[in-house]
Image 1: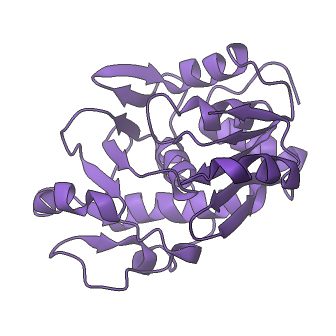
Image 2: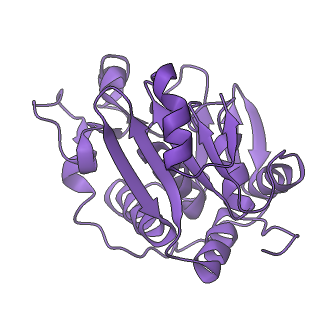
Length: 246
């Protein structure tokens, strides 16, 4: 991979697709349910496109709007991060306001459903294969497992973001796309192509680098939710991981 990283998410993903589109990019484990999901670069890009279309075409978000991402350790976290950055949305982490839209899991429903009359609230069941909730959602809350499947596998923003667009806001502190990817490439202890096993949530302030660093360095990430400490070494070996971050 080139040593100088692209300065936008779209550029980083395009480089990954050009280099080796079939390789694993995001592998997800839940040690409680034994669920395993693997997204290749191509499959990940398709999910990002569907999620970006859902946000922009179905819910009218535009470049510069703010998206609250309140998801636990799960493969949909990197998907919605990528969808936001593809569309030029600002991912909001930390704080309490619902921003211009919210993506949450089941545990976030009580917190965010009361805002559904004011902003789009999109809920992910976190069930296998991203399917719909088994039970009805609160009024006004959108089920991602219903709405995302009809979205196209490709998405081209009408107003593409550039390196100066804000990518992340953490407790009011902003970071641009250019700064995000430069920091991920320059500050990482990983080497090119590393496969990182982590229990850290990518959709959280401390865990963001657990996704951005492997992606910009041509590597991949193995996300482990509800980890069983006695099984981590076996998971590390089975996935041929080369680095670990807890």
